[in-house]
Image (cartoon, rainbow, N blue to C red):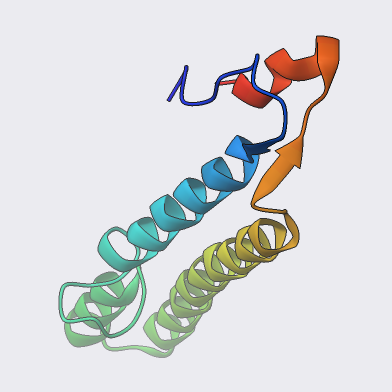
Length: 111
């Protein structure tokens, strides 16, 4: 994207920081959908392990272990989801264009 803006032109420039935030928001959303969620779309990154252990290991210790791993998997997914929401909020708070006058005009083309 370097060079997308002409630093010599007066007036508003596209807010590249805002654009980068949205790209990051999309990347985090894709990670949640494709890396932290089982292929069937249900559960979290630890769901398969929990199901496998629950089917193979029958004991009170197994139940405790599976509950702990399930809680961990849910917490990981929630942490990423909360982070994605925070990125979106930061993106939404940014203006679409920015005024970058004079000698600071290079900052509009920071990428």
